[in-house]
Length: 208
Length: 427
Image (cartoon, rainbow over all chains, first blue to last red; front, top):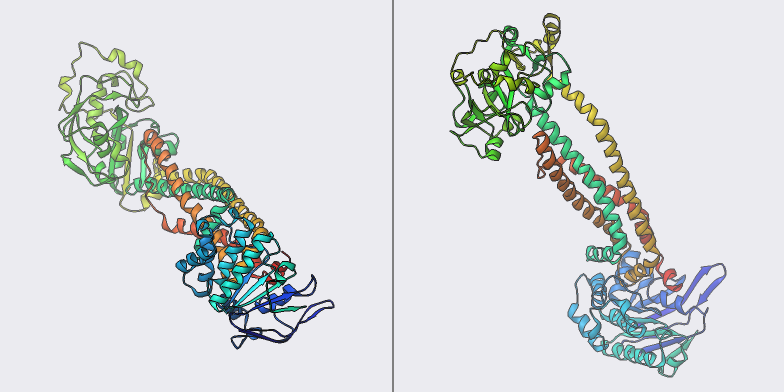
């Protein structure tokens, strides 16, 4: 459950964003569309606690993450927010399974190895768990990053252009998996994208 | 887990890692070797002069006198008259005076004519059998016993002079009456008999050479040939009381009752006799200060290599930082704190350094084993690679870790202060 109020952000030098209020309930999805330069990624980073808003509040499960300290913010993000980025980044020296498990360790201090395997199974990656991330295709990498984002059963799943580097087939597949898994884990899902292919798949949409 | 990631990371770039570790290993190995060599070398040298304040011997290089009489490595400076030496051995300052007469060797092990007191100066007495009492009875050092496989009651023939290939004295076999206890000093590699044995062995040639320079037996191989007169029987030399008149010995090891002797004797001896009194402590210090220059140069070289390895680690970390900033941003997104990233970089560097240190310590010791092998053969001096010089090696570990931290500090701070939003947005 996430609610924002009066969010605004400034990079300085006249770049200023005002964002519409957002409310997404657990298990629901929201697609935020908009062209480049409209502040899509900025909004996503605000929601993920990577940036601090100039004004306004972001409440996740009634905690205002804009008011948390740096360290608490890191911790809160690890436990409650999953991020899927446009490009999938990994710790290059760890294999697929270890990368997913690492996310659980960083957030909670315990290694959820079984959970990670289960998720990777659901994402059709069980044959690749001992490979290095660089040995996977782009579509597979993106699915691994979904598994990593969901390993801690976050309250909020944020996806930044998750499909833009994928072909049609993989784009559909990734979008489907995101919505399905969000629903089954009771996670609020917010996707920011300019990808036209996704617009037909989500009923709940806003434009920046 | 951070350590595990760090470990995996350093092996993800095996060439960078290998370079850093090899450089560190080289510098640590050299320094470790120097530490061990210096320590054990000095200890061996020092332990041998524990009970010797001065050495009385023929004039010449004092260092040579010390090396030959105390350490049994160099040729002697010459001989001294036993009667003259004896008056000084009875001087009131003297606590113990042990005469030495060099003569022959057995397969490279020196046979030294002396008194049983020699065993007290150097060590712990006889372990097996008894001390020599008659001519041609010998007590052998424990290393000699082991290497030559000699037991009490065995007999052997000595070869003339210093070299193992010298002419054999076939008329006078030595008989082993005792084996000395292991001392870790030069006595382990010696064969000891009474002074009279050395005289008796060389009596016949003694007529040939008069008071000339050179050890009792050295440098007379040519004289020796005609000394072996068939008519001459040596059997009667055994147990025969040897007339000390005009006889020579090589050196005397002196221990004083009062420290006054150490100060006064060198001048007294120089003024009143044709002999010299050399202080082992002073000569050995002089020797070490000569070595010291070489050792120091090596040490600087090793520190130079360590400095370069520090730079190598720095460059490796700094270069990969560029490609790894997304990795770091991602770790932060997943809930890692800034401190954890700082640690990650620092631990990577420390792992390299500690690995290098461990390798270096091992390699240094392997080098010591090699050196020990050749020094044992040449100087009868061996080094123990399993000795740890905790203090100095501790400093070395500290220095290595310091280099690791220094090399990592800038990359670690960069990782610490990484702006994740900016990094991910510019992707």
